[in-house]
Length: 468
Image (cartoon, rainbow, N blue to C red; front, side, top):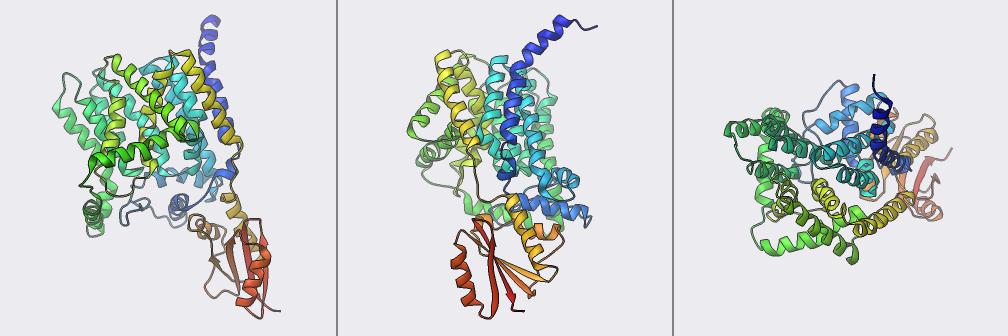
């Protein structure tokens, strides 16, 4: 029989984690229905789920990337078969599914960091992840980059176990790295390189384990290899074009300074403070330097993985000629959080300054969050058109900004009323222009037709019908 004293002791130790989970859960559910966008990144897995459940087809590739002809693996799409299956192909379950994964990530992060380091660092790290509005936004965005953080936790844990002499964890870590590179974001290759560089620092290395680990990494490419073979080497050809067009070959030092000052540091600073003004940039930089110093001071070969992780990612991008968006540094968030936790855990004044600012700006940002376009707006707009057409055929034109004109075609399809070219009624989606202006404009464009403007304050739906 378990002693009540022992049970109470365990409960007391878990109170900080339970409080963090409670706060993190509340912040994630707050305004979730407003925050889920259902744009291009969310429409792709929705279409894959439709093909799987309705057409009984499964694709071996995922989303096409910004470089045309370059694709992710299919895993991110396959994962979302779960919420789409539960909700009858409607996207309603998707944001809640990601909330569940987010809460699970908080728990996994806490116990992994506690196992590797200590309870203080685990508590600080879990609190940062649970409360950061940027972390919550990544979940609500529902795209493949979100899984880089969970992949990073797996990578960290496997390397830790490898340094304890468990060789098989090098293989497990390589497999996780391959999973992330192929299915979530190819730039995770820099985290993979950092993983293997650090692994080489361990004494008593076994070359055969590294060979097996490389194979474990490459096995994740199997679906893409099959797809490439079936489509006349299309992926390999596109990859060669990508390398020839996007390899940087000049001014590495200047580009390194630019990436550090203008991309990486603002992204990392914004993750903590929802701002990248000069004060927060300096504060974050000083915390990173202090954290680096404390980690090096431990003289533990394993912990050097954290600075190596960040530095390898930064140096990797100086060879890339294309645009480097700040979210490419999302893969460095786990080492960043741990390094900052190292910096503040034993200095009460720095800890209080950091945590006070962090809590205030992130909770305020969450509470004050608002948006004029989201999944609910798009779903209501589609239902508005279907109801207004009263069973007659219709067509739809989207005169919307590029960033918010996606998602509608899938919703029409899943609601069973597809627009048809030459349909009896015409609906045009506009954004922000006042109703009286739009009505006048379209009356002049379509003389002899009945023109009406409706829906909501921002998204205007112009209905153009024949005069009865």
